[in-house]
Image (cartoon, rainbow, N blue to C red):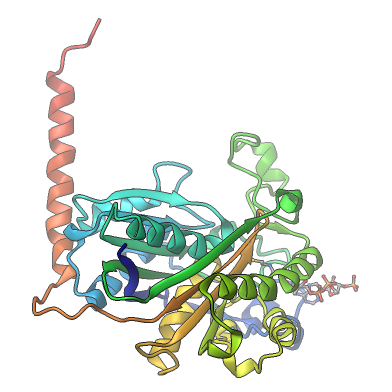
Length: 367
Ligand SMILES: CC(C)(COP(=O)(O)OP(=O)(O)OC[C@H]1O[C@@H](n2cnc3c(N)ncnc32)[C@H](O)[C@@H]1OP(=O)(O)O)[C@@H](O)C(=O)NCCC(=O)NCCS
């Protein structure tokens, strides 16, 4: 049975920064309150011309560069997002088209902020089953578009960004060792974005009622998050046959510093066992774990052979954890330049659109 290794990683962070002081000019809040309650100092906000797929594609190309893998070799693309570009088509298909992943299946996965754990596990299991060899998993968010900038209880929390992993099959033991995924829909009301779906299609009324914005019972989410972070970590480690002492780094979903602190206390681990960068990005939902991972790697906190736990929670309610042995790129002599495929992808997309148009002109209506 092949192992599923994490062989590539990349991020895309929009340049514009929104500080706590900037938010204090919009709503009745202040830097001290936000830092004390959440640990957040600033977050990045996508420019008007940056979309969920734009950030996803940038992160994907970087991850493919690290993996030294051509987009045409991908079998599967999973995009997980709490702010997908559309209800449909899937953002994953937009990415597939833009990077030129000619033979990949592509779909979106919705598990809110736990999405990256769910998606990485789905990709890993597809590789472990032998049905595919190369997968791309992306968490990408432009949650600022669904943020009510007049609601001080939510607008301080979220940020935009994307992160991606490439997963590849190899006979060498390691890679994704175990995962757990959980849900509890009885808590669905705690964190919602109700407008624009089939129950509340967009109307003047839904807009008037602010249903197109994130709504949250902060205290309920906080209580739930602090409960599940530690238990999911322990459960995933047990499945991997590992002890907590063997873990080199825990990379939690970056929602709130105090939630991570409480999880550390529950697990009786020092905080330096956790990768924390919520102060500079806020909560980037599905992107927070890969963004934190890439920073951990760049700071030398993850090396080849490191044992890492990823753990997350989010709307749904959903939560999960995944244990991996960090492997790095699979050694090869070939040198691939994934970014060069983008021109080819654009041309291919244009030709296919033109052919589809011509086909429409000449095809006879079936009676
Ligand atoms: C949102 C959160 C920071 C609020 O912190 P809290 O300590 O629970 O604060 P409360 O909601 O109880 O509010 C306490 C007071 O601060 C006020 N307040 C809320 N937001 C504020 C803000 N941005 N600035 C200043 N005061 C604020 C409230 O109105 C309340 O005032 P009151 O006591 O006069 O009624 C916290 O609940 C949280 O982080 N929850 C988890 C959210 C999360 O992680 N969501 C994503 C999950 S993926």
